[in-house]
Image (cartoon, rainbow, N blue to C red; front, side, top):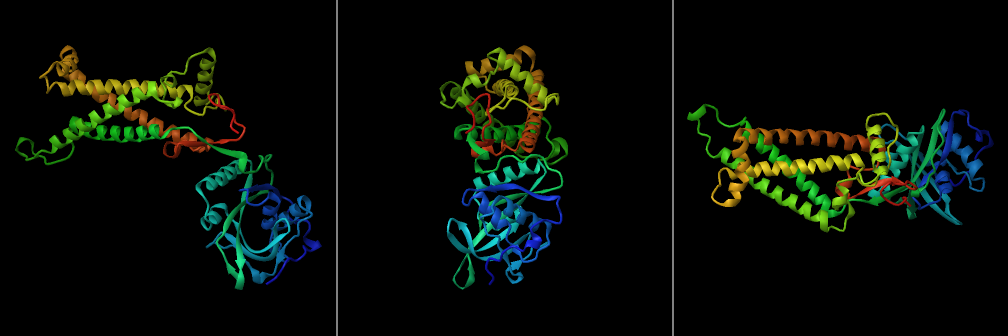
Length: 409
């Protein structure tokens, strides 16, 4: 096994000046300088432009750090099968005066993460900083380490961070460090449970409602066909889920006046409380219309989303009422169902059924647009809005100043 070998003077300057190092990102276990030093571990006499650029960066930024190079016997290069290299180095100064025998894994971020035990939070930090850097023209060179124990036994690999590699012209690099991104809790568990129950209820009601409107399966043959009780089951599921949906809606109304979660309170349903709110709405509309490049940052829903969801709440309430009207036609045995069925007597049963059906299609249209905008926002902003309805939080850059929340620290 080879130890630390001084970097030959002949390789002190890269032969490919378009390759350069912009900085380091660390998960905090090791300093940025040590992560850079680990990334610079390479074979003696390497002519790889990335290796040479890293050697120059170490000589410039960390002249106190020894420049480790190892013999080819201790180096396993990257290949199409594994997009990372493995290098064993002796007595590497990980922190302070402590020296350790380690194996350095260096390569593609996703490939290295796949070989290491990385927490979900660290994966989020790594990917978000990598995407942020890539938008500025930089590529992440991931670094992981594994301890070497007696008889050269290699332990599990631990992700340490990555180094920003630039090829050709690049934009200014954002600050590095794990504090670049912050995970902020937004949606409470009760709100998330309500959301997913609502998704399941709307899906079930839409499917069974469409079958009731236009049966498209089952035996054919008109009156002579034996269809059994299939439509009875469909109607039973529709009615049962419909009543559960109404109960869910009532719990949402109660929460609007009793919940301690400000995102569930009734005043979140109507954002236009001042002239400034109207201005924010105009800026958000301009962003959605591709007139403005940026919109005001909101931790919760922006004004346009709040107005949209308020309209959807009202539409769902109307849909529940028309559903009770149609259900009441068959149960006019007491004053309540007689009252519920009254609109059908005023405007006619066909109109109520048509209106109920059209509202279903309107809700479908909303769901399609809602999913599209959620995916689009996540693709452009990378803040985890979709996953927030599962884990309750979003990722925001440190120092960001949402309109509806304190500065992200």
